[in-house]
Image (cartoon, rainbow, N blue to C red; front, side, top):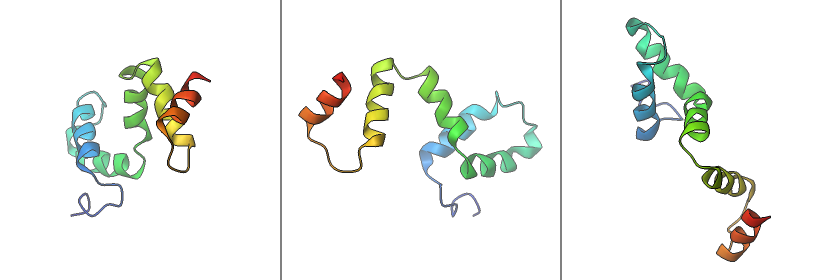
Length: 83
């Protein structure tokens, strides 16, 4: 219940946690602690995806979208990406 009721819980995070656990170097008996730590601070999980699984264009798009605080027209988004 601690996992499901965690403020950062979502199925995608749990999928990432379980997929990365085997390469984490964490002992099996510490899996639950690893899950909770990953929910508390999921930056490491997303950082791996951001750096190794996204193209330069995809990273640029994500960064531009993260800096826009309101809805954005497609033409304005395109302009921001080209800039």
